Length: 164
Image 1 (cartoon, rainbow, N blue to C red):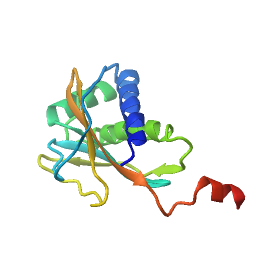
Image 2 (cartoon, rainbow, N blue to C red):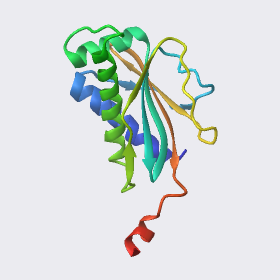
Image 3 (spheres, rainbow, N blue to C red):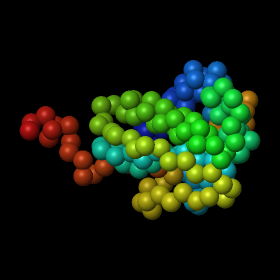
């Protein structure tokens, strides 16, 4: 994965959490993630397509997810509530959208978010893309951003698009 794709996600998650939740976030050291297990209980997942392809995951321990959703929704919600999943999905949507806006002119679309709730869940990514995990800490608890994206070799180049 190209390093230029990491910084936009760090900036975006900090911006989303500080503006939408008034929740400062400390960013840990990015690392290559081993295994498919998220290590957490709640994950919001967004797919990316276009000039950049892959996925982005925002993952939380159960308690942290509940606290973050309570701040975002203005009320406590159980993990079985459709509004809980919507809130997690909207957070990952805002993080991915904010990051893609800083991909230096790349044309990228993001999918509708999916949300998985349950301890020990697995997220399968394509085997040719390493997953970069960025651990984060907030007053509500831990959060992890998992980025598995690459430049799409089949996407038309900007020069080819301009000459068409």
